[in-house]
Structures are given as structure tokens and as C-alpha cells.
Length: 341
Image (cartoon, rainbow, N blue to C red; front, side):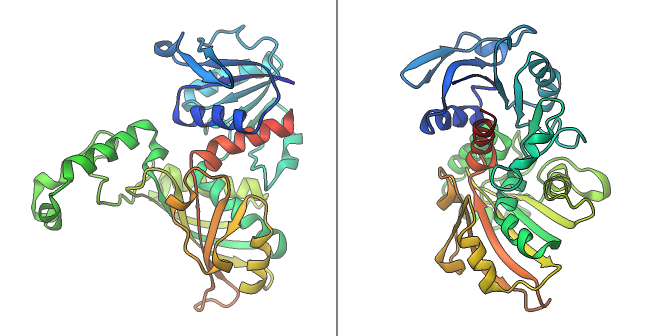
């Protein structure tokens, strides 16, 4: 039995973690829930009872074995080391420690052996997009060694939290019955009313800017996918390029992936590997087309549209989708907790 703390218990991912801990019957002797000041005292249902949220204090982690963190980077930077110093092993879902050389970034189905490298007592979960992609690609990499990835992601609004979901929901409602206006939106300024989360409408639209602009015109989401992939696969010079797009989908990220290999790997062998891969469900013998809605609320990453790249011998195209809140965040954290416990 483990004594567990969860920082960020009231958020979208925190709520999903609590469901998973209960569903998977994680052996908990004590569970402490931490939340922001406005949620202190809020009672959250868990198992057969309720647990009151508490605030973060320097001595609040004493006696805990594991602490799972799902909060913004500055809060994680402050409190994850305090939890580790108190003797807990920390599983961090933020981006705060992913690129630290002495903090492993781990996907349960891909590189669980890296948990042995927790020299600071902290392990990081990757970004949800990286998580979904590499769960599918890892068996192909083990067989034939990936040399280059060209990725386009189609990321749901829940990646921006509850505010993203609320903004899409509101815009769908206010835009109902206005198809004529939206058909001429380029010359109808009223159709382009910005939201709060995004400065252009997300309902009925796609926004090719996920995250903030960084070096060389790439966004923070795109750099996460590049750098985390290299670190998880232990290939620091892996050629990866990405375009991350926000789409009007509530839950579920999808990726179109073009992958090249060091050794020959045809479609048939790829399908065999994917069919047996942990955490992966192959759709229609690899020729199906899973959607984010198909993946919403389930554990596995769904893979389809597997086909050879006719423009580049030896390369493959595939389509991957997964629940960004579940496998992309909450499930992996709980799986790592199971390993550590």
C-alpha cells in the first residue's frame, strides 16, 4: 500500500487521474489532494468516500511515498523538489523538468527502464502529443531505427484546459445557424470575433499555432515534440520536424506521421508490430481510420492509415490518435506510479 499525494486534483487531468486510480484499484493507504487557494476545503469523491483538498505547505508531503504533479510549470518548479526532498518519488506532468539532464522523461510502454535514472527523485511525463505519437512509433523504432519524422498534429481544445473546452462550446452555440456568415468570413469581420484562449475563432476553424512562438518560427508545442522524442528514444540528433495545429475537437489529439528508417521495414511487418504493441490498438488491419472521438475515454492509442510512402522508398505514413487527457497525461502518470509502487 502506498501513501500518495496529487497536486492539481481539481483540474481536467487531475480529475482523470482520480478516476484511473480508482478504476485500476491502485493500492492506496492514504491519499492527499492539493489544490489552489480557492479550492482548499473542497471535497472530492474518491472510492467510497470524499477527500478535502488542502493547500501546499513545506511540510505537507511528510510521510508520502509518491506525489503526482499536474499544475503549471512555475508551481511544479517550486513544489516538486520540495516533495522529493520530503522523501516522495515525484511524477511530474508539467513541462518544468523534461529537459533537465538528470530527470528522465518516461512513457510506460516505451522506456520504463529509465525510471532507474531518477537521481533527483523526479520523473517527467512527456507532452500529450509526444506521448500519443511515441506509444505507436516505439515498436517500429525498436525494429528498424527511426531516422526522420515529419509530423503534423491535430490537437483538441482540451489541451488548453477547461478554458479551451468552454471557449469551443460557447462558440459552437453562438455560431449555430450562421453558416452563411461563416462561408464569407474573410470579408465579414463579425464572423472573426476572437475568443479569450485563442485570438481567432476555434469553432469551425483550425489554428496552425499551438503554443507560443519560439526559435526559428516553431512553437513551444512543436519544440516539445522534437526535443522530447529525441530524449525518450535516446537519439539526440534524430531528425524531427513538426507542425502543431489546434482543431475544433473537445478531446483527442491526432497525428499524421511520415517516418523513415535506417533498415528496411515494409507495411506488412509494421502492421505485425503494431498489432502486438502494448498500449496500441490497430484499426482495420492498419487500413482503418480512427478519429479522436473513437479514442476519447479509452486507454489505447489508435493507429490506422498505415501505408508505404510512394515518394520515398522505405518510408511509411501512418495516422495515430489518442485521448490527450487520458493516455496523453493521466494514464501514463498512474502507470508510472504503478511501476514505482
